[in-house]
Image: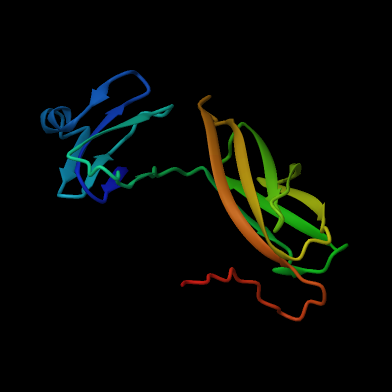
Length: 193
């Protein structure tokens, strides 16, 4: 499924599949066994019963857009037996502790690499590779820095499926670094005047 939402103006959504086929509302109307298209004032969606694997393009054309511009949001989702899930061994750590990051890749790919990009509360990033520990599981240890606040872990798995197609899957996790594990909460403070 590909979906697009626009706040104001008129939106035309066109897709280009991995074989270069241009998919627009007219194509969908003539090929209902391949794709269905629906749209209303602000939302347009294309649904496929069996989408072609590979790189897709989503093209947006706006008209009647206000002088100040507008916001568009796009979304794509596909069913697959190849999934990536992840977790850390704790939700909260103290500086100097070791966090264990675990990822599980289901669907039996023929080859895969899993990496974690770690973004700390100061905005610094660090990338680490997770090692395969068998059964579709991957693991790495991360030395927790002395940077208090929330940390995002972005897991990415890339590789080849059993049928030879390339794949990429992603998952995001968060954990807290606290000086004393006392369940402190760090929230952004927004001042409105």
